[in-house]
Amino acid sequence: MEWLDVRTFSFHFRNLRYANGRNCSYLCFWVERVNPWSSDSSDFGVFVNQVYPQTRQHAEISFLSWFRAEMLSPDEQYEVTWFLSWSPCLACAEQVAEFLRQNRNVTLRIFAARLYYFWKPEYRAWLRRLHHQGTLVNIMSFSDFKYCWEMFVYNQGMPFQPWEDLRENYESLVEELEDIFRNPVERLGVPSFSFHFRNMPYAYSRNGSYLCFQVERLNQCSSDSSDFGVFVNQASGHAELSFLSWFLEEKPSHDEQYEVTWYLPWSPCLRCSEQVAEFLMENGNVTLSIFASRLYYFWKPEYRDALRRLHDQGAFVDIMCFPDFDYCWENFVYNQGMPFQPWEDLDENYEFLVEELEEILGNTMNLLKENTFEQQFGNQRRVQAPYSRRKTYLCYQLKRHDDVTLHKGCFRNKKKRHAEIRFIKKINSLNLDPNQNYKIICYITWSPCPDCARELVNFIKSHDRLSLHIFASRLYFHWIKKFQWGLQQLQTAQQVSVAVMTHSEFEDCWEQFVDHQGRPFQAWDKLDQYSESIKRRLRRILTPLNENNLVDSFRGLRLGSPSPSSLRSDPR
Image (cartoon, rainbow, N blue to C red; front, top):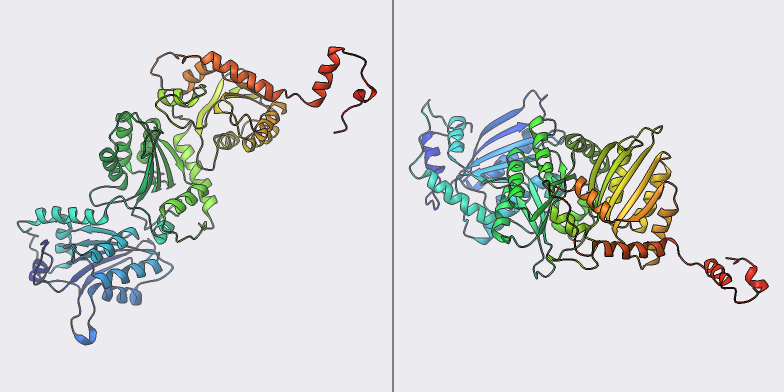
């Protein structure tokens, strides 16, 4: 059927909350091939429930049968839109979900005039399953009814006339649908994650967006220190805006510091970027890290500018790498105990997107907030109030031999990728002139771990004209032998020096890397005393008393003639 008559449409599509005597269901569809080179790129029409005993079949199943037989090809991408008088029943929802699971090249949008048995738990559950699987499920609005009237109704040129309670019923049904979807949800299904988070540089038919989040209170005294979940795009707004609304309702305290982490299939759109930047400006006690699987319209100047504004406002923006996908799989997906299996081109796509993001952000650098600097770089033995975990931050300046700064930036540890490793990768990407002399000054909150120390040594060995000067605020596990060994390896490497930050280094770090608004650096209580204590500790590590040192020391005492055995060197 290609057209509906006016009376059928007006009766069956009226968006009553509770509709009696409307047992039949109609499906108006539009199918579009995404491939622009296809000569027959779209199709449309109407299906209706078959009520005869021999051919009894709902409109949704009739569509799937027709689509499989007439259009479906594994080599093409399809965008399918349905306008339904009723949302799908249990059996139809199950079959539609299975069809979408088997055909990842098809995306489906459903606009329903009414919700079918929306008060029954099993019907709500199946709508949620469709939604979480990536189907956009929405309530028909005035513009949708008008579109259907013009596209699918034999209207004889008459304009669409809305009924009296259309808007009121629409708002009521939207509210009901949002309650069904219960944002945020706990986890994603495997098909939704595998399809929507795949990091293709150019991704078609992935119109839905998800937001996997983790919120951490930095106040260690809090009994409820973290929260996590998944937001899905709603009719009322994108997942990012849904998160902001939820956060402001659930985490209202301005006396606590929050670290928020997002994992997104798409980087934020223009409107979301603007509102997130405004949110960060108004909530200085919140830091936000955004890890995106893909970049949304990254070739358009206005989208690039939006990412830069977010970055400048203090949001940490990065591309998801293998450890991030693995972390999401473990924490946000109903994986049934299965390990994450990376797709073939994951690393290659990651490298492409990282280069694109670095080109967008250029040499811009997130300045640290004052409280972040004081909490993270503070060299006190005990964490100061408000109590928070001290993480690794690495601030660096790349300078020419004449002391001109060429590049500077700040990294912090990212899950399974330490700040030092990210720093090495960044410097390598700059393609320094091998015939020029350079030096790098690093201010780091914690001294490097053994693995990072080894990587830094290998890095400096591959750059003959580069010197590295590391200033650490604190020593990381300084009482453990292998951590001491890492520092010794760094110190003995040519072109590397390891030292402790003193007042002058803290002041320079403040001037270069903190958004201080013109305020001078104010030393905290006992800063110099703590620095001296840490310097003595580092000196003992870098000049260990070995057996030969002891022999030499005893010789210096001149207590008697040395024995012949003491003159022999230690065979080890």
